[in-house]
Image (cartoon, rainbow, N blue to C red; front, side, top):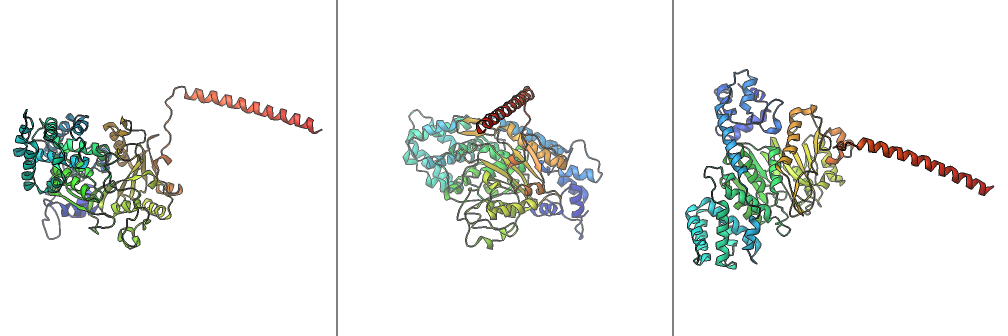
Length: 565
């Protein structure tokens, strides 16, 4: 069968088949010079590729593979249960259970901070990640190090630790830059020993058979990065993306085995690590993904490299320093999944005249004073034909009245690249109070529809302290559930009062191209059983007041007439 026939049976567009062939070395080879493929070998290959949640058809449960859809379309007799899929499902269940069964203690970072003392916080952060990497990848050095840390009268522990780090960086060059910036001499032997002991106590007992993103070292790394993100830890204009937002975005975009993932403002690598964790939780393998990332500061680059190395992603990751808007390393669009939490409202973002950049020819040149629509267009420009992107933006970007931005927004709406807008709760970021919207974008619409899904999630989440809120698993399920249902039902989706609504491109244009979810999501019906009675009572009182006002007006007229006689 031809590629076009494969695409039709698998329910994808023909470019997707070309992408599979280009990106996967194990893709079946044609059996003749006419580029025709054997059905059986193609079905076996497609059985290993789960369909992303956002493109499942009605009736297709989560975990359905392209192979199952392919077999049904061709009228093949499907097996009761595909053995490979059954094995993958079992592995996924075990790994997911292991991941949710253990979380680091909430007082982990405060306990570690006690031993930092007056030492430099940035150097301390890098020390903690270096130690996690040492524990994760070099037990031969870690075991004697923890033994020395537990001695009642410890050796000069700083000297012991310095020697261990010197040997460790020879084997793992990825930690070399961080080790150079860790100034061990600002802490006492006891402080360093207690830090090593604490990390070992927290990570002890982890299973050796877990995927790299589910090890305790990896889970602790993500928790520490979340805790580091305070007001004084903003690096190069880049903010750490909270773990709950990462989990929401990867759930919505559903990266899968073999995808090419990119983050043009990756900061400490939270989205890239989160994408790998998502794939592994569902039975895939993170080395089957490839990652690209750019970050603006030298320190962010070190932190991202450490984070991804702890997650064992160094062999599939290419990180570079620089502004993706100023220094675009690739002029092609070939990424399957893009995540971005770029600096908001960035000024002086372009080299020379922005109009000369080919990335802006499709929708228009962003204004010089604000890069928001540069980041949005950059994401769309870098997508493969079937790619999808999630970009965090300030709420103001959705309603900006700037001439350039309004024009860009209108063209993006009319061409169907705007898929979904999700207004998120306040205080999700420790480092900024700015409320944000998550934009879901696509390279091209999957059909002739130009509708947009709006989700108003501002009431979700729970406060964990006075200034910080997180999205709970059930909040993520509610948001993702609405998006997945819309994807399944298409035009039949009717939304959810007070939470989700769909608007056509024409409707959005009529409303001045506003992409604020609050403009489209109708108020939720009141749950007060006495609401109707209260409204009726207030209405009667209002009518009485109107009658009384009319009586007073008549009385005033009579008195004025008497005065004027």
